[in-house]
Length: 189
Image 1 (tube, rainbow, N blue to C red):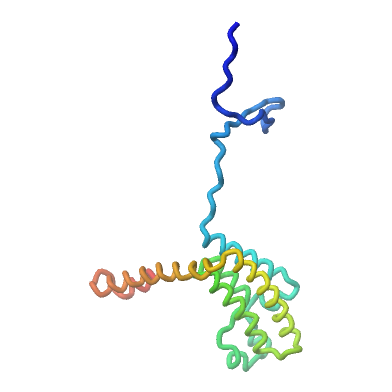
Image 2: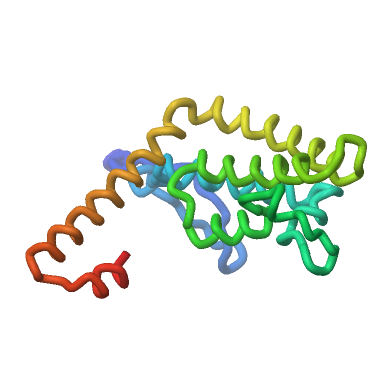
C-alpha cells in the first residue's frame, strides 16, 4: 500500500478538553490569537484605581473615605483653613465616572486629601499622623506608576485637554455663527 502523507496544517498535540469523556480535540496554531493591548491611558487609570483601592484598604483610610463632617464635628474654622476640601471617597467617585483628565490630576486630589488633613490638624494629632502615613504609602506606590509610565503620564492629560479644548472651540464658533445658542452649547459641555 502507498505511504500516507503527513498533514499540511500544523497542530498542537492532542489535548483533552472539556466535553465528553475521552473526547480528543486538536487546535491549530493558526487560530491562536494574541490579546489586544489596552491603550496606555486605560492602563494608567487602571493603576490609579488599583492604588486607590490599596489606600482605601489601609487601616487609617476610614478617616479619609468621606468629606469632613464640618457641622457634626463643630469645626467652625474649617473652611477658613481649608479652601479646597477633598477626600478619598470623592476621588473614587471622580475616578469611576472618568472625571480625571490625567493620572496626574488624580494624584493631585489624593495629595490634597492628605495635605488638608495635615494643614488643619497639628503635628502630633492622630489625624495628622494618619494622613502622613497614608501619604507615604501613596507616594511610594505613585513613584512605581511614574517609573512604569514615565513621561507618558503628563502627555495623557495634555492630549485629553487638547481634545476637549478643540471641542469647546468648535462650540464657540458654532455659537458665533448662530448655529447653536449659548444655552445649548452649555448643555453639550
